[in-house]
Length: 137
Image (cartoon, rainbow, N blue to C red; front, side, top):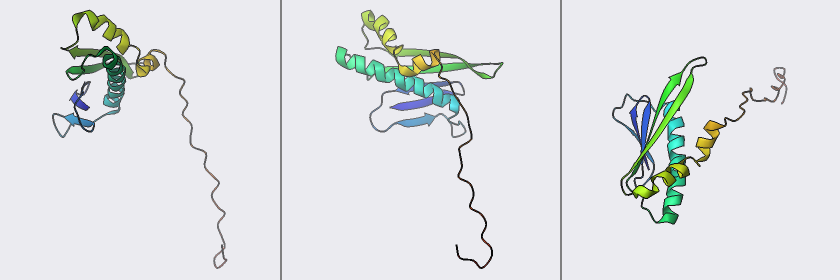
């Protein structure tokens, strides 16, 4: 699988044989948390589509998934995620089914029904008491 950073607000996922790679058009482009969010959505959608396509005997070699996002304010966040897929070998009568299958992705469901999130400092063990100089520990 290959994830390509298309811009600061877009990625592309392609099913390429071999280890997963993340590529960019320039060394200056950084794989940001927003690229990671989009990548998780694209990977999840690919996984459920791939499973369905395997059972339906439809090859996914030419499936390409693009994810683009926009930001919103108050609070500053990703406000929109737009997913599109280009799948030339998908029969036209299966496009609606593929869209329904893509929406079964767990990450898609999580974004529609956000989890409760808590942020707390880790609990630390108390620091050992200092030992007087010259005493055995």
